[in-house]
Image 1 (cartoon, rainbow, N blue to C red):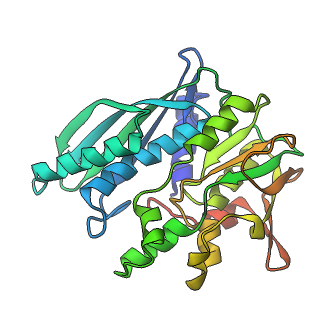
Image 2: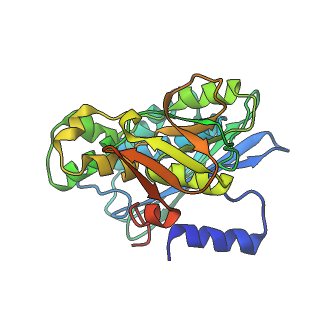
Length: 301
């Protein structure tokens, strides 16, 4: 059973309107809330993460969800479950990385520490919706343009290099260890787009985010691969195009917005229909949601 199946069961069982987007929009409180967890040897390995970069990334992944909602990140709580082998220096460096990722805008205000047989990290982030129009993946409309911010394929390539015990190119490896959150892009969209719009981060892959928006909005996405931003350095590696499309943890943002706005890089258009029509290598490839699900990272595999 995949993550999406679990989420569907939870949503049906709780019968709530809040589950579906990466952030829950609590309109009555004027906030959005998100939570992400990282598990040792599932989401990261200490073979290549330092305590500092692990702390940085733990915060960054949550700030990315807040940015994708169009809100402004304000507060975070950090919960750690740690084995006996963890020393004081680990904690100090981990929180230095956390603080650096906050970029003097969001603040860590609490959390919890417990014992465990491996490292578990869970971060909750709260964002303010004041002066922002909040996104939903259900809001893509026929005729909207599809735009992205950030490069794609670098994090997946960097992870493969780390797993192969390679240390070059460092620029690509760093994209996996310390992703650049697209905070300014999320702010621009949230403050300036007045119509309903869809926006997600690409933590589970660019195609996964496009597919989720298309499915939830009941539309078709037409994408031109040649327009997707990527670092040319990854082109030296095998299957680099698949990394651009399906590789996770780039933490770019993708949005479906009205045609009149000129933000980000325009890579496609929302049409009537379903799934994704991908223009690539001179051909049009149609991808259904099942086609995409078979190629993305599965937390339960």
